[in-house]
Length: 186
Image (cartoon, rainbow, N blue to C red; front, side, top):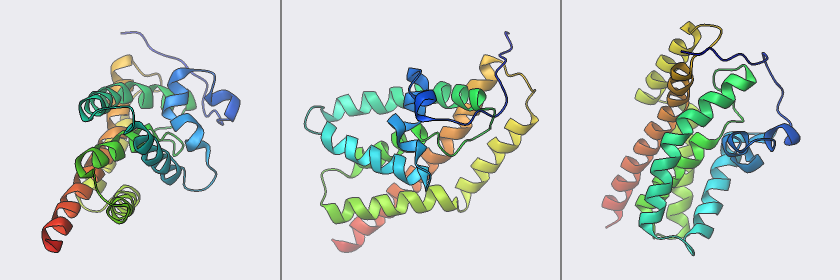
């Protein structure tokens, strides 16, 4: 398998992010460049894009976009992290975007208060990584540090999967708590 060689530790700029489609997606159309809480900025971008997308896309369309976004995200997140020379750079927010879309597709339609609770829960689970989310994150970060200096395509996809999977776990935990809230208020 071919080894990829990229310069170590690139500092992403607006110009750098928008040079390729993979960087643009990985950085959530620039939201990941936020100097403060890029994951939160990416999740806010996901929320706004979802609300706008509801006017143009069906649930089935969103499910295809989310499914494709998860699969493509494994490559995108892994490849861009390789370009940056970092395992899981905070500005890579595609993982937050597709995971929060997954939350929204299951809870919508709902009122703004329930959307805000879902947002807060997702950010909590993603940032704090309690329980199994933290174990998943730790496992993949440890595996990534064991990888060779020059990664193969398969290692890049695996690294990207590690970046995406903890956000999917955060989405799952968010959905569990949202279901419990729905149960308790009925």
